[in-house]
Length: 428
Image (cartoon, rainbow, N blue to C red; front, side):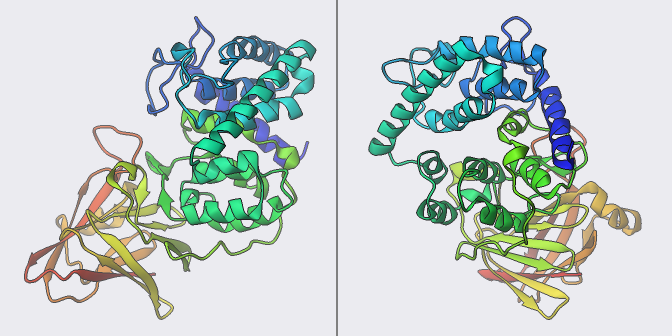
């Protein structure tokens, strides 16, 4: 057994363990609302997640799990609306099929079962799955002609350079979960190796790029399907951490046999809407845009990934102007303030030295504050400012409890004119 296969078996076991708490012993389905992260099973039975669960069971490659998967698959296929070809978002909504993006999520799962799990599916059920796949594909093609699709959905129907460039320009790749799923959809493309080589520059045990859908779980960045994919591609295991139920399910989409040998790491694409700079042992990523309020879940305009932790910045009503170097030991980040306030969040473990040596919770922002391997400070401005630190979870923190997982660092003016654009420095 190769290192890659051994790792994958381990991840499948972790995934099944993570999903088990959401499975109903009465129905056998995964019962969970897609918007929920952690909690008890609820009445909702999402279609996409349950087809992924079937694929996950097939990935175990055992008689017991295959039998269970076939039982669920047969039941799920009965919920396809034959005339339309689509499935309901929740099984309880049948025969209503309101989600026009669902076919584009399901088609890669169907293809994986048809192309990679045929002996386990069985002849009769395989034929039924083929027929359902044909109807679903026709439904997706019809939707693509009448509706503007998100960039990630285009790869289900076509695999050309234009689609990839559209995907990069759309900024959807800044969500590591979407990036991982798109890469998986392109595994048969002739450019798949090149895409993986570029994607590796965004991963070093965790996602390094600009964050638009990159969440935190407790003291660690949330594990996504992108992490699982790059871990297998580079044959670099990561320590076991708690997985979201969706990551655990989407892990089933990966087949280690179609991953190529690791190639030379290539630089990620350059663009006007983001900057990614390596700084010592850390990576600083900036999103040079501000999404609408309803799209800000998991959005972080400035993110610094250190070897042992992450620093996330929140700019209420503000945006990043640019990132530049000042010699080899300092980076300068310029921001336009929409409110006289800059917030940074960091894991509590990274602030141990400050807590032990400081006599209070205040600090001089112009002198800077030490965070792990870095020092963060405010550049000279006409205003007077004060820095403070208190326990407070970052907006993209998924796991909530009373004690909190992060420190909240706030820099705010005391008096004087507040400039529209301010700069702060990061030093190693």
